[in-house]
Image 1: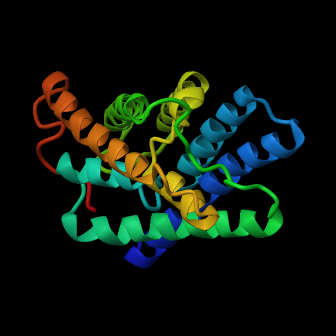
Image 2: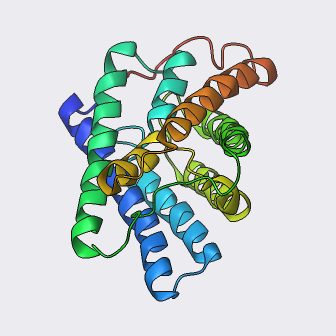
Length: 229
């Protein structure tokens, strides 16, 4: 059953809200109390992605990430007319999450914004590589433009956890423009924001090319037959 667009957009907003609220919330709480370790933050991001895919995969496809939506479009699995509405919904959900965190925990300066720990080039390359891996996994386990089912949730949530575990101390391991945009705008820390908007999209584009080179013919060149978007 294909749900109306407004319900799908609401699902994208709500799912992205929870990813930002739980993930960046874990960063804020960890910074303020020391109760959540780096591993705990990585697990929080991975778990909330898994839960939201399980909850909304059959509603909106569970993109929750502008770069993923762009990647699905470039892979010709998602119609262009719905790209902007999906992205606006994702960004709206992320902004609401950061605004709520700013009210609940106003003492924190960055609200979990992604900030490079080293050079901009180091973080740029790291984020592009992470986005390639994430988008490739998503394309490999999704049906058309939908991430749904236990396998998709485990694989994608697992990759998010893995990326955050080893690359979080380098670049913040964002992999998601909406996740980086919201806390940066709300907290006013936008110095390196361009990097976290650009790198995931570049990585998603490269992942589509990789998918075409390694997967079966038609995987990323035609909208999947029988999957209406």
